[in-house]
Length: 249
Ligand code: NAP
Image 1: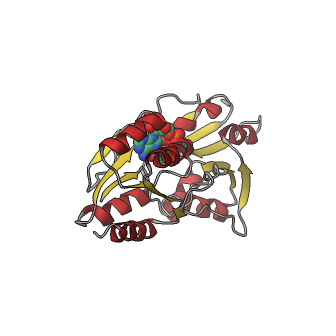
Image 2: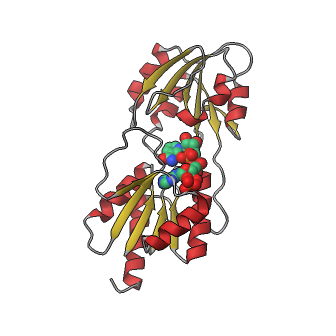
């Protein structure tokens, strides 16, 4: 069974490992190409976009893909909508892995916002010490709010930065003790993050709660209607096994 995993997440890599040596599947993982040195994968990878919905339709047909797993980041809404449209156009079986969102706990000082522009606006006009863990594609609204001092953590160093910025390049998972020390050392007053969910980058929220730091948190885009989804890689693996069984493999 030919499987395409749309990746870039912990879950996609876990699913790739689960199917890599399983003779029932010939799987391939695709990455948007947002990072310069992606983590090694045990199955062939395709790096870069497909060229919109039509490009993905062509790819699914050329590669004779039987099952498509959308394991992209919860904020990769365009790729998810393209996957749904292309799967419908080609009759390809489709499942999304949609990890649960983070929910506030007692003691959290969360300020939910709908998008990154609102996140930058929520910082206000007076200079603050802000930690940004938003991804290097989403810095523009903060470059337009240059009064703040930013600590920016991203996988690669961003090309363009606000005037008062320190950069830490790192890839999760992160431990709470280290996150607390980072927030304290840099005297961070506000943390800005997407509501990515998952365990790899959740420690910063626990550290912020312990230190009483405000968190400006960007809410997720909704999943498209009619998209079947599961919360994690093991559930997606079981779905693939069921698809293979239906085909008699
Ligand atoms: P997007 O806006 O949903 O996708 C934009 C285009 O990138 C897609 O139309 C597609 O290009 C290509 N693309 C995205 N994911 C792909 C994949 N797995 N394989 C092949 N092509 C892919 O997603 P985004 O621009 O990557 O990111 C949107 C948000 O998600 C940002 O906030 C970002 O920080 C966050 N995020 C993304 C990733 C990731 O791995 N993509 C990881 C962490 C966080 P074509 O139309 O040409 O096919």
